[in-house]
Every structure is written in structure tokens, then in C-alpha cells.
Length: 362
Image 1: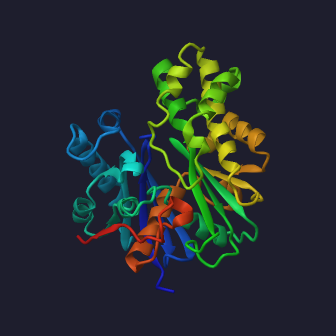
Image 2: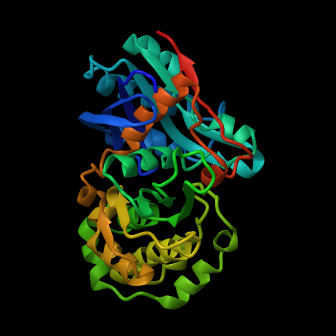
């Protein structure tokens, strides 16, 4: 066991809403305490810059501007946490193509270290991808620590509903997250991203607040069946997705009314989760939901109907569903600093446990 330190984690997700920041007191193994949190929304102009760079790789047009926006926004928020000993900086994912050995998170951790005057751990995914892993999801080791923190004794699953959905199945009886059988994690399919894109295009708003529009609509099951025919669903986990892997989903609902399109896209997200749940080694006692999607009552109900498990927000276990990913990168930063693995065969499909990440001193 190392010494527990206050680490500050930051996350800017594929939904491009803003930057989350959260403090965790940890030695990189157990969670001692959760600290204060913060949020900084992106302005419309910043969001437009980031959106224009989605799908692009380093040195392509617009990427340098997106990286500058990312670092400036993070520096502004993270500088308000003077007590943090180190920072875990995820950056902004612009493109993710693990099958060809590459992933791209915009934002220079060294530049951020200079602005903050503190040690920054960053570029968490590249090493895993370079060694044949999917580079995602990376929150599972933190989910394992959370399950230990709230005293889980039977298997439990975490579902993150961000732009993309991902599941982590955990056996808390195992001694460490990298041990075989401790964690199984994988992406489930698109979650909020297509719903948000639809709402932006059709109604000029960023999301289907509470799932109200979807609740009024009818689900077109033929569209769901076609969606589930995508080769992604037949692949065994671990497996991961890019935000744009299901780019044909929006065109598939283009002829539907706003409510029917929202209902069908919401059902597609739920169906992806249900397909994923079939890969669990054994049923978890409950499915704890984190990310913005947990506020979509229609989506939560559709998931519960399709998976046949108790489905509840992570707040039911005493956790903060808005900050779990930011907290994860605080926890992972301490692991990287200590040389502990942050991914394993069961979480990313990498051949052996990997300690990724780069460390930049101010």
C-alpha cells in the first residue's frame, strides 16, 4: 500500500457538454474519500470547434484548435482546486480506431502541467492500444474500487450512459482488478450521442430532457432488429466503439416523426445494453447506472424491461453519477504514478495488464 494522496481527475466526454473535475483521496488501490467536484460548460463556440474536429487525427485541420480549447477549458477549471497533488487529464477524444492501433485524445498534458504548476498524468489510452488492446473502457478498475468502497459482496455491474454506453461487470471477491475474473468491461453501443444529435438537428436543443419526447413516441422494432444486425454485437468482449461507428442510425429514423425517432433511438441504446448483458459471466445483483443517460427516465425503463435486472442510478450506492468518470481519472493517475496497471485482458482485451499514461512535471 502506498500513501493516499488527493488527486484531481478531469473528464470531457463525447457528448461535448463540458469538463467535469473531481477530487479523490486514494493510494491507487483503495478509495479513502471523495472530495469536492466542479464543472465548466463549453461555450457554443468552443463546442463548435470541438465538433468540427471529431473523427480527425493529429495534424489534420482543426485539431490544433480543438486541443487549445481543451487545454484552456481544463486549465480554467482545474486551477480552482489548489489542494490537488496531481492531475489526471483524459483530454478530448476526437477519434478512436483500436483495430488499427490508434486512438486520439486532443490536449497536451505537458502544456496543462505548465499552466497548473502541478504534475499531470495524461494520454491514458495509447499504450494499451499499442499493445493490442481496445484502449477503452478505462473506468473499470475504478469501478472495482468503488464496489469495494460500498461493500459489495456479490457481483455488481456498472453501466455508463454517455455518448456511447459501456458496461463493467465486477466480482468484488477478487483481490485486485487486474486478476483474472475480477472485471469484464466493454462498450454496448451508442447511448446518448444519436439521441442528442437528433434533438439538435430536429428541435435545436441539446438533449431529450428526461426522455419526455421518446415517451410520446412509438418504437420501430424493425429498425432495432436492423441495428442489432451490426457485426459489433456478435463480437465477444472486450470491445470498444467510436462515437461515429453507428453513423447510419440517424438516417435510419429520418422518415419518422420526432417522437417516434427519439423513441426508436432510445430503444436502440437499451437494446445494445441488453445484448451486452448476455456476456456477463453470471448475473449481477444490480445494474448501477452512471452518466447523463441515467436522468432519461424512458431510457432507464427501457433498459430495465430488456435486461430483467434491478436498474438504478449509482446514487443508490452512495456514488456521484455525474462525476464518476472524472473520479476514475484521479484514481488512475495515482495508479500510473505508482506503476500499477490501469487495464487488463478482461477490460480492454490487451494481452497482459498494462500501466499506460504519460507523466508531465510542471
